[in-house]
Length: 496
Image 1 (cartoon, rainbow, N blue to C red):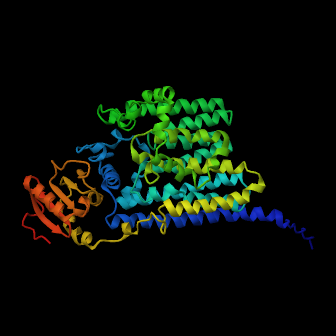
Image 2: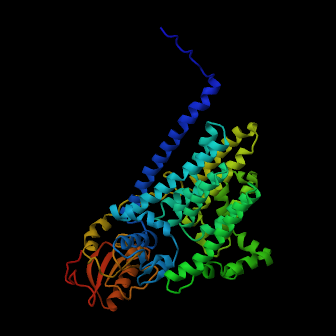
Protein backbone atom coordinates (compact mmCIF):
# COMPACT_ATOMS: atom_id res chain seq x y z
CA UNK A 1 0.00 0.00 0.00
CA UNK A 2 1.46 3.36 -0.99
CA UNK A 3 2.47 5.72 1.74
CA UNK A 4 0.14 8.69 2.12
CA UNK A 5 1.50 12.20 1.60
CA UNK A 6 1.90 14.33 4.72
CA UNK A 7 -0.80 16.94 5.31
CA UNK A 8 0.49 20.49 5.15
CA UNK A 9 -1.32 22.86 7.50
CA UNK A 10 -0.92 26.59 7.12
CA UNK A 11 -0.56 28.57 10.31
CA UNK A 12 -3.73 30.49 11.20
CA UNK A 13 -1.97 33.82 10.59
CA UNK A 14 -0.95 32.73 7.10
CA UNK A 15 -4.30 31.19 6.14
CA UNK A 16 -6.31 34.27 7.10
CA UNK A 17 -5.14 36.49 4.18
CA UNK A 18 -5.71 33.61 1.77
CA UNK A 19 -9.28 33.21 3.03
CA UNK A 20 -9.90 36.97 2.92
CA UNK A 21 -8.54 37.21 -0.62
CA UNK A 22 -11.19 34.67 -1.58
CA UNK A 23 -14.05 36.22 0.44
CA UNK A 24 -13.44 39.90 -0.39
CA UNK A 25 -14.36 39.74 -4.11
CA UNK A 26 -17.56 37.93 -3.18
CA UNK A 27 -18.43 40.67 -0.69
CA UNK A 28 -17.62 43.41 -3.19
CA UNK A 29 -19.63 41.67 -5.90
CA UNK A 30 -22.57 41.21 -3.54
CA UNK A 31 -22.55 44.85 -2.45
CA UNK A 32 -22.27 45.96 -6.08
CA UNK A 33 -25.15 43.73 -7.13
CA UNK A 34 -27.28 45.07 -4.28
CA UNK A 35 -26.51 48.62 -5.33
CA UNK A 36 -27.26 47.80 -8.96
CA UNK A 37 -30.67 46.28 -8.30
CA UNK A 38 -31.73 48.94 -5.78
CA UNK A 39 -30.75 51.93 -7.88
CA UNK A 40 -31.97 50.41 -11.14
CA UNK A 41 -35.35 50.04 -9.48
CA UNK A 42 -35.22 53.57 -8.03
CA UNK A 43 -34.22 55.10 -11.37
CA UNK A 44 -37.00 53.30 -13.25
CA UNK A 45 -39.48 54.10 -10.50
CA UNK A 46 -38.57 57.78 -10.68
CA UNK A 47 -39.19 57.77 -14.41
CA UNK A 48 -42.39 55.72 -14.29
CA UNK A 49 -43.86 58.15 -11.75
CA UNK A 50 -43.21 61.12 -14.06
CA UNK A 51 -40.30 62.64 -12.15
CA UNK A 52 -37.65 62.26 -14.87
CA UNK A 53 -36.80 65.12 -17.20
CA UNK A 54 -36.89 65.53 -20.93
CA UNK A 55 -33.80 67.70 -21.15
CA UNK A 56 -31.64 64.74 -20.13
CA UNK A 57 -33.38 61.38 -20.14
CA UNK A 58 -35.80 62.34 -22.92
CA UNK A 59 -32.98 63.79 -24.98
CA UNK A 60 -30.90 60.62 -24.85
CA UNK A 61 -33.93 58.39 -25.31
CA UNK A 62 -34.75 60.20 -28.55
CA UNK A 63 -31.10 60.01 -29.66
CA UNK A 64 -30.99 56.23 -29.21
CA UNK A 65 -34.48 55.74 -30.64
CA UNK A 66 -33.49 57.68 -33.76
CA UNK A 67 -30.26 55.68 -34.01
CA UNK A 68 -31.97 52.29 -34.06
CA UNK A 69 -34.44 53.69 -36.62
CA UNK A 70 -31.74 54.67 -39.10
CA UNK A 71 -31.00 58.25 -38.01
CA UNK A 72 -27.74 57.94 -36.05
CA UNK A 73 -27.70 60.13 -32.95
CA UNK A 74 -30.22 62.60 -34.33
CA UNK A 75 -31.78 65.01 -31.85
CA UNK A 76 -34.23 67.89 -31.75
CA UNK A 77 -33.40 68.87 -28.16
CA UNK A 78 -29.63 69.11 -27.73
CA UNK A 79 -28.23 72.64 -28.04
CA UNK A 80 -31.83 73.84 -27.68
CA UNK A 81 -32.03 73.45 -31.45
CA UNK A 82 -35.57 72.47 -32.47
CA UNK A 83 -34.67 70.92 -35.79
CA UNK A 84 -33.07 67.54 -36.53
CA UNK A 85 -29.33 67.65 -35.96
CA UNK A 86 -26.57 65.36 -34.72
CA UNK A 87 -26.08 65.05 -30.98
CA UNK A 88 -22.37 64.93 -31.82
CA UNK A 89 -22.61 68.62 -32.73
CA UNK A 90 -23.20 69.18 -29.00
CA UNK A 91 -20.90 66.59 -27.41
CA UNK A 92 -18.67 64.07 -29.14
CA UNK A 93 -19.44 60.73 -27.49
CA UNK A 94 -18.81 57.85 -29.92
CA UNK A 95 -18.69 55.33 -27.05
CA UNK A 96 -22.49 55.62 -26.97
CA UNK A 97 -22.48 53.17 -29.88
CA UNK A 98 -21.76 50.46 -27.30
CA UNK A 99 -25.22 50.99 -25.79
CA UNK A 100 -27.08 50.87 -29.11
CA UNK A 101 -27.39 47.04 -29.32
CA UNK A 102 -28.86 46.88 -25.82
CA UNK A 103 -31.29 49.69 -26.61
CA UNK A 104 -32.26 47.96 -29.86
CA UNK A 105 -33.23 44.84 -27.90
CA UNK A 106 -35.07 46.67 -25.10
CA UNK A 107 -35.84 50.20 -26.33
CA UNK A 108 -36.87 52.82 -23.84
CA UNK A 109 -35.49 55.19 -21.23
CA UNK A 110 -35.49 52.39 -18.65
CA UNK A 111 -32.66 50.68 -20.55
CA UNK A 112 -30.53 53.81 -20.31
CA UNK A 113 -31.15 54.08 -16.58
CA UNK A 114 -30.12 50.46 -16.02
CA UNK A 115 -26.97 50.89 -18.14
CA UNK A 116 -26.01 53.98 -16.14
CA UNK A 117 -26.51 52.16 -12.84
CA UNK A 118 -24.44 49.25 -14.11
CA UNK A 119 -21.58 51.61 -15.02
CA UNK A 120 -21.59 53.15 -11.55
CA UNK A 121 -21.79 49.75 -9.85
CA UNK A 122 -18.82 48.55 -11.92
CA UNK A 123 -16.89 51.64 -10.86
CA UNK A 124 -16.39 50.02 -7.46
CA UNK A 125 -14.34 47.19 -8.97
CA UNK A 126 -11.19 49.18 -9.88
CA UNK A 127 -11.46 50.92 -6.50
CA UNK A 128 -11.33 47.53 -4.81
CA UNK A 129 -8.47 46.38 -7.06
CA UNK A 130 -6.38 49.42 -6.15
CA UNK A 131 -7.12 48.82 -2.45
CA UNK A 132 -6.21 45.14 -2.91
CA UNK A 133 -2.94 46.14 -4.56
CA UNK A 134 -1.98 48.72 -1.94
CA UNK A 135 -3.44 47.43 1.35
CA UNK A 136 -3.48 44.35 3.53
CA UNK A 137 -6.37 41.92 3.29
CA UNK A 138 -9.39 42.67 5.43
CA UNK A 139 -11.29 45.71 6.59
CA UNK A 140 -8.82 48.22 5.08
CA UNK A 141 -9.73 47.14 1.57
CA UNK A 142 -13.47 46.86 2.16
CA UNK A 143 -13.45 50.33 3.74
CA UNK A 144 -12.86 51.84 0.30
CA UNK A 145 -15.69 49.95 -1.32
CA UNK A 146 -17.97 51.45 1.34
CA UNK A 147 -16.49 54.91 0.75
CA UNK A 148 -17.19 54.54 -2.97
CA UNK A 149 -20.83 53.50 -2.64
CA UNK A 150 -21.52 56.16 0.01
CA UNK A 151 -19.63 58.88 -1.87
CA UNK A 152 -21.85 61.96 -1.97
CA UNK A 153 -22.05 62.63 -5.75
CA UNK A 154 -22.55 58.96 -6.71
CA UNK A 155 -26.21 58.51 -5.82
CA UNK A 156 -27.17 62.03 -6.88
CA UNK A 157 -25.77 61.34 -10.35
CA UNK A 158 -27.38 57.92 -10.50
CA UNK A 159 -30.85 59.35 -9.77
CA UNK A 160 -30.48 62.33 -12.11
CA UNK A 161 -31.68 60.80 -15.39
CA UNK A 162 -29.02 59.59 -17.87
CA UNK A 163 -25.73 61.25 -18.80
CA UNK A 164 -22.98 59.90 -21.01
CA UNK A 165 -20.13 61.13 -18.78
CA UNK A 166 -21.07 58.44 -16.23
CA UNK A 167 -19.57 55.84 -18.58
CA UNK A 168 -16.15 57.33 -17.81
CA UNK A 169 -16.34 56.39 -14.11
CA UNK A 170 -15.28 52.71 -14.40
CA UNK A 171 -12.94 53.44 -17.32
CA UNK A 172 -11.01 56.12 -15.44
CA UNK A 173 -10.95 53.84 -12.41
CA UNK A 174 -9.37 51.03 -14.42
CA UNK A 175 -6.93 53.48 -16.03
CA UNK A 176 -5.75 54.46 -12.54
CA UNK A 177 -5.50 50.84 -11.45
CA UNK A 178 -3.37 49.90 -14.45
CA UNK A 179 -1.07 52.86 -13.82
CA UNK A 180 -0.77 51.74 -10.22
CA UNK A 181 0.24 48.27 -11.37
CA UNK A 182 2.59 49.66 -13.99
CA UNK A 183 0.59 47.97 -16.74
CA UNK A 184 0.73 50.73 -19.34
CA UNK A 185 -0.55 48.56 -22.19
CA UNK A 186 -3.87 48.00 -20.46
CA UNK A 187 -3.87 51.61 -19.28
CA UNK A 188 -3.89 52.77 -22.88
CA UNK A 189 -6.92 50.61 -23.69
CA UNK A 190 -8.87 51.97 -20.70
CA UNK A 191 -7.80 55.56 -21.34
CA UNK A 192 -8.58 55.41 -25.06
CA UNK A 193 -12.07 54.12 -24.27
CA UNK A 194 -12.54 56.94 -21.73
CA UNK A 195 -11.60 59.54 -24.38
CA UNK A 196 -14.54 58.29 -26.46
CA UNK A 197 -17.01 59.13 -23.69
CA UNK A 198 -16.94 62.93 -23.91
CA UNK A 199 -14.57 65.68 -24.94
CA UNK A 200 -13.60 66.91 -21.45
CA UNK A 201 -12.06 63.55 -20.57
CA UNK A 202 -9.11 64.64 -22.72
CA UNK A 203 -8.43 67.44 -20.23
CA UNK A 204 -8.31 64.86 -17.44
CA UNK A 205 -5.59 63.14 -19.45
CA UNK A 206 -3.23 66.04 -18.79
CA UNK A 207 -3.29 65.09 -15.09
CA UNK A 208 -2.56 61.47 -15.97
CA UNK A 209 0.41 62.61 -18.06
CA UNK A 210 1.88 64.72 -15.25
CA UNK A 211 1.49 61.89 -12.75
CA UNK A 212 3.06 59.30 -15.03
CA UNK A 213 6.07 61.55 -15.63
CA UNK A 214 6.66 62.85 -12.09
CA UNK A 215 5.64 59.83 -10.01
CA UNK A 216 6.27 56.88 -12.30
CA UNK A 217 9.17 58.44 -14.25
CA UNK A 218 7.73 57.05 -17.47
CA UNK A 219 8.62 60.01 -19.66
CA UNK A 220 7.75 58.47 -23.01
CA UNK A 221 4.31 57.37 -21.82
CA UNK A 222 3.68 60.67 -20.06
CA UNK A 223 4.54 62.75 -23.11
CA UNK A 224 2.42 60.45 -25.29
CA UNK A 225 -0.55 60.79 -22.92
CA UNK A 226 -0.24 64.59 -22.88
CA UNK A 227 0.12 64.81 -26.66
CA UNK A 228 -2.80 62.43 -27.25
CA UNK A 229 -5.03 64.26 -24.78
CA UNK A 230 -4.37 67.74 -26.14
CA UNK A 231 -4.57 66.62 -29.75
CA UNK A 232 -7.83 64.78 -29.10
CA UNK A 233 -9.39 67.76 -27.32
CA UNK A 234 -8.32 70.16 -30.05
CA UNK A 235 -9.44 67.81 -32.80
CA UNK A 236 -12.83 67.12 -31.23
CA UNK A 237 -13.66 70.74 -30.39
CA UNK A 238 -12.18 72.34 -33.51
CA UNK A 239 -12.95 69.66 -36.11
CA UNK A 240 -15.33 66.85 -35.08
CA UNK A 241 -18.04 68.88 -33.33
CA UNK A 242 -18.09 71.62 -36.03
CA UNK A 243 -18.22 68.85 -38.68
CA UNK A 244 -21.31 67.24 -37.16
CA UNK A 245 -22.72 70.71 -36.46
CA UNK A 246 -22.33 71.78 -40.08
CA UNK A 247 -20.00 74.59 -39.12
CA UNK A 248 -21.31 75.44 -35.65
CA UNK A 249 -18.36 75.91 -33.33
CA UNK A 250 -17.89 74.39 -29.88
CA UNK A 251 -19.74 76.92 -27.74
CA UNK A 252 -19.14 75.82 -24.16
CA UNK A 253 -15.97 77.79 -23.51
CA UNK A 254 -17.59 81.00 -24.69
CA UNK A 255 -20.63 80.57 -22.44
CA UNK A 256 -19.26 78.80 -19.37
CA UNK A 257 -15.85 80.46 -19.08
CA UNK A 258 -16.75 83.99 -20.16
CA UNK A 259 -15.36 85.40 -16.89
CA UNK A 260 -11.91 84.20 -17.97
CA UNK A 261 -12.09 85.14 -21.62
CA UNK A 262 -14.25 82.45 -23.16
CA UNK A 263 -11.60 80.35 -24.96
CA UNK A 264 -9.00 77.77 -23.89
CA UNK A 265 -6.12 80.16 -24.60
CA UNK A 266 -7.85 83.04 -22.81
CA UNK A 267 -8.50 80.84 -19.77
CA UNK A 268 -4.85 79.74 -19.68
CA UNK A 269 -3.73 83.38 -20.03
CA UNK A 270 -6.01 84.48 -17.16
CA UNK A 271 -4.72 81.71 -14.89
CA UNK A 272 -1.10 82.72 -15.55
CA UNK A 273 -1.48 86.51 -15.49
CA UNK A 274 -4.29 87.08 -12.99
CA UNK A 275 -4.00 84.51 -10.20
CA UNK A 276 -5.83 86.73 -7.69
CA UNK A 277 -8.79 87.11 -10.04
CA UNK A 278 -8.85 83.36 -10.56
CA UNK A 279 -8.68 82.83 -6.79
CA UNK A 280 -11.67 85.12 -6.28
CA UNK A 281 -13.56 83.14 -8.90
CA UNK A 282 -12.82 79.86 -7.11
CA UNK A 283 -13.25 80.96 -3.50
CA UNK A 284 -17.03 81.15 -3.48
CA UNK A 285 -19.44 79.63 -0.99
CA UNK A 286 -20.95 77.09 -3.40
CA UNK A 287 -17.57 76.04 -4.75
CA UNK A 288 -16.15 75.56 -1.27
CA UNK A 289 -19.22 73.50 -0.33
CA UNK A 290 -18.59 71.43 -3.45
CA UNK A 291 -15.01 70.75 -2.36
CA UNK A 292 -16.16 69.89 1.17
CA UNK A 293 -18.63 67.32 -0.17
CA UNK A 294 -15.88 65.73 -2.27
CA UNK A 295 -13.01 65.63 0.20
CA UNK A 296 -14.79 65.67 3.55
CA UNK A 297 -15.83 61.99 3.43
CA UNK A 298 -12.21 60.88 2.84
CA UNK A 299 -10.79 63.38 5.37
CA UNK A 300 -8.84 65.01 2.50
CA UNK A 301 -6.33 62.19 2.90
CA UNK A 302 -5.60 62.68 -0.81
CA UNK A 303 -3.05 65.24 0.40
CA UNK A 304 -0.82 62.31 1.37
CA UNK A 305 -0.90 60.82 -2.13
CA UNK A 306 2.05 62.93 -3.29
CA UNK A 307 1.99 63.50 -7.02
CA UNK A 308 -1.41 61.81 -7.07
CA UNK A 309 -2.90 65.26 -6.49
CA UNK A 310 -1.96 66.11 -10.06
CA UNK A 311 -4.60 63.67 -11.25
CA UNK A 312 -7.30 65.81 -9.63
CA UNK A 313 -6.20 69.25 -10.80
CA UNK A 314 -7.45 69.35 -14.42
CA UNK A 315 -10.96 68.16 -13.50
CA UNK A 316 -11.19 70.47 -10.51
CA UNK A 317 -9.91 73.31 -12.69
CA UNK A 318 -12.47 73.00 -15.47
CA UNK A 319 -15.28 72.65 -12.91
CA UNK A 320 -14.28 75.37 -10.47
CA UNK A 321 -13.26 77.93 -13.10
CA UNK A 322 -16.66 77.74 -14.75
CA UNK A 323 -19.32 80.39 -14.24
CA UNK A 324 -22.02 77.75 -14.92
CA UNK A 325 -23.30 76.74 -11.48
CA UNK A 326 -24.27 73.09 -12.23
CA UNK A 327 -20.63 72.33 -13.02
CA UNK A 328 -19.61 72.83 -9.42
CA UNK A 329 -22.55 71.06 -7.82
CA UNK A 330 -22.16 67.61 -6.26
CA UNK A 331 -25.73 66.79 -7.30
CA UNK A 332 -25.08 66.91 -11.06
CA UNK A 333 -23.33 64.66 -13.56
CA UNK A 334 -20.38 67.02 -14.09
CA UNK A 335 -18.60 65.72 -11.01
CA UNK A 336 -18.75 62.08 -12.20
CA UNK A 337 -15.07 61.87 -13.30
CA UNK A 338 -14.00 62.99 -9.85
CA UNK A 339 -15.53 59.92 -8.20
CA UNK A 340 -12.73 57.48 -9.15
CA UNK A 341 -10.08 60.21 -9.04
CA UNK A 342 -10.91 61.28 -5.48
CA UNK A 343 -11.49 57.81 -4.05
CA UNK A 344 -8.42 56.17 -5.59
CA UNK A 345 -6.00 58.97 -4.76
CA UNK A 346 -7.41 58.81 -1.22
CA UNK A 347 -6.48 55.11 -1.13
CA UNK A 348 -2.94 56.05 -2.13
CA UNK A 349 -2.85 58.62 0.65
CA UNK A 350 -4.18 56.08 3.15
CA UNK A 351 -1.51 53.59 2.07
CA UNK A 352 1.16 56.09 3.15
CA UNK A 353 -0.05 56.02 6.75
CA UNK A 354 1.88 54.00 9.27
CA UNK A 355 0.23 50.81 10.50
CA UNK A 356 -0.52 52.35 13.90
CA UNK A 357 -2.51 55.17 12.30
CA UNK A 358 -4.62 53.12 9.94
CA UNK A 359 -7.11 51.69 12.43
CA UNK A 360 -8.11 55.06 13.98
CA UNK A 361 -8.19 56.74 10.57
CA UNK A 362 -10.41 53.93 9.27
CA UNK A 363 -12.85 54.54 12.11
CA UNK A 364 -12.85 58.29 11.52
CA UNK A 365 -13.33 57.82 7.80
CA UNK A 366 -16.28 55.48 8.28
CA UNK A 367 -17.90 58.06 10.54
CA UNK A 368 -17.13 60.91 8.13
CA UNK A 369 -18.40 58.97 5.13
CA UNK A 370 -21.63 58.08 6.94
CA UNK A 371 -22.20 61.66 8.14
CA UNK A 372 -21.64 63.21 4.72
CA UNK A 373 -23.77 60.54 3.03
CA UNK A 374 -26.62 61.16 5.48
CA UNK A 375 -26.38 64.96 5.35
CA UNK A 376 -25.65 65.53 1.66
CA UNK A 377 -26.10 62.25 -0.23
CA UNK A 378 -29.11 60.86 -2.07
CA UNK A 379 -29.36 57.45 -0.46
CA UNK A 380 -32.76 56.30 0.83
CA UNK A 381 -33.03 57.64 4.36
CA UNK A 382 -30.63 60.54 3.87
CA UNK A 383 -31.72 64.12 4.43
CA UNK A 384 -31.65 65.05 0.75
CA UNK A 385 -33.46 61.93 -0.48
CA UNK A 386 -36.80 63.07 -1.88
CA UNK A 387 -39.15 60.13 -1.45
CA UNK A 388 -41.92 62.01 -3.25
CA UNK A 389 -39.88 61.68 -6.45
CA UNK A 390 -40.70 57.98 -6.44
CA UNK A 391 -44.36 58.22 -5.49
CA UNK A 392 -46.98 57.93 -8.25
CA UNK A 393 -49.47 60.68 -8.97
CA UNK A 394 -52.73 59.11 -10.22
CA UNK A 395 -53.36 62.08 -12.51
CA UNK A 396 -50.48 61.07 -14.79
CA UNK A 397 -51.59 57.49 -15.17
CA UNK A 398 -55.15 58.61 -15.86
CA UNK A 399 -53.86 60.88 -18.63
CA UNK A 400 -51.35 58.42 -20.12
CA UNK A 401 -53.90 56.97 -22.56
CA UNK A 402 -54.46 60.45 -24.01
CA UNK A 403 -50.76 61.00 -24.53
CA UNK A 404 -50.48 57.56 -26.15
CA UNK A 405 -52.93 58.64 -28.87
CA UNK A 406 -50.54 61.24 -30.27
CA UNK A 407 -49.49 60.05 -33.76
CA UNK A 408 -45.97 58.54 -33.71
CA UNK A 409 -44.55 61.01 -36.25
CA UNK A 410 -46.31 64.12 -34.93
CA UNK A 411 -44.16 67.04 -33.85
CA UNK A 412 -44.59 67.35 -30.08
CA UNK A 413 -43.73 69.99 -27.52
CA UNK A 414 -44.08 68.99 -23.88
CA UNK A 415 -43.32 70.09 -20.37
CA UNK A 416 -40.00 68.86 -19.04
CA UNK A 417 -41.35 65.97 -16.95
CA UNK A 418 -43.59 64.74 -19.79
CA UNK A 419 -40.98 64.85 -22.55
CA UNK A 420 -39.18 61.65 -21.54
CA UNK A 421 -42.49 59.79 -21.93
CA UNK A 422 -43.01 61.10 -25.46
CA UNK A 423 -39.45 61.14 -26.76
CA UNK A 424 -39.51 58.12 -29.07
CA UNK A 425 -40.34 60.09 -32.19
CA UNK A 426 -38.39 62.10 -34.78
CA UNK A 427 -39.42 65.47 -33.35
CA UNK A 428 -39.80 66.30 -29.67
CA UNK A 429 -38.92 69.47 -27.77
CA UNK A 430 -39.18 70.53 -24.15
CA UNK A 431 -41.05 73.74 -23.45
CA UNK A 432 -38.73 74.79 -20.63
CA UNK A 433 -35.92 75.39 -23.13
CA UNK A 434 -37.48 75.62 -26.58
CA UNK A 435 -40.33 77.29 -28.45
CA UNK A 436 -43.39 75.28 -29.48
CA UNK A 437 -43.81 77.30 -32.68
CA UNK A 438 -43.50 74.28 -35.00
CA UNK A 439 -45.25 71.65 -32.86
CA UNK A 440 -48.39 69.76 -33.92
CA UNK A 441 -49.21 68.81 -30.35
CA UNK A 442 -48.48 70.49 -27.02
CA UNK A 443 -48.60 68.54 -23.74
CA UNK A 444 -48.90 70.79 -20.69
CA UNK A 445 -48.55 70.09 -16.98
CA UNK A 446 -49.23 72.62 -14.27
CA UNK A 447 -46.21 71.21 -12.39
CA UNK A 448 -44.17 73.11 -14.98
CA UNK A 449 -45.65 76.44 -13.81
CA UNK A 450 -45.31 75.84 -10.08
CA UNK A 451 -48.63 74.01 -9.66
CA UNK A 452 -50.35 77.35 -10.22
CA UNK A 453 -53.75 76.56 -11.77
CA UNK A 454 -54.40 80.18 -12.69
CA UNK A 455 -51.11 80.40 -14.55
CA UNK A 456 -51.82 77.00 -16.08
CA UNK A 457 -55.16 78.27 -17.42
CA UNK A 458 -53.40 81.29 -18.90
CA UNK A 459 -50.86 78.98 -20.54
CA UNK A 460 -53.64 76.96 -22.20
CA UNK A 461 -55.34 80.15 -23.35
CA UNK A 462 -52.06 81.40 -24.80
CA UNK A 463 -51.69 78.30 -26.97
CA UNK A 464 -55.33 78.47 -28.01
CA UNK A 465 -54.70 82.02 -29.18
CA UNK A 466 -51.94 80.60 -31.39
CA UNK A 467 -54.38 78.28 -33.16
CA UNK A 468 -54.19 75.21 -30.89
CA UNK A 469 -57.32 73.36 -29.78
CA UNK A 470 -57.76 71.60 -26.48
CA UNK A 471 -58.32 67.91 -27.26
CA UNK A 472 -57.87 66.33 -23.82
CA UNK A 473 -57.53 67.55 -20.27
CA UNK A 474 -56.96 66.08 -16.85
CA UNK A 475 -55.99 67.12 -13.35
CA UNK A 476 -53.47 69.85 -14.09
CA UNK A 477 -52.77 68.33 -17.52
CA UNK A 478 -53.75 69.33 -21.02
CA UNK A 479 -53.14 68.17 -24.57
CA UNK A 480 -53.62 70.60 -27.43
CA UNK A 481 -53.37 70.07 -31.16
CA UNK A 482 -52.76 72.52 -33.96
CA UNK A 483 -55.43 72.37 -36.61
CA UNK A 484 -52.87 72.63 -39.41
CA UNK A 485 -50.74 69.69 -38.28
CA UNK A 486 -52.76 67.31 -36.10
CA UNK A 487 -55.22 64.77 -37.31
CA UNK A 488 -55.21 61.55 -35.36
CA UNK A 489 -56.94 63.00 -32.29
CA UNK A 490 -60.11 64.72 -33.26
CA UNK A 491 -60.69 68.17 -31.70
CA UNK A 492 -64.07 66.98 -30.42
CA UNK A 493 -62.50 64.18 -28.35
CA UNK A 494 -64.24 64.30 -24.96
CA UNK A 495 -62.09 65.93 -22.31
CA UNK A 496 -61.66 64.75 -18.76
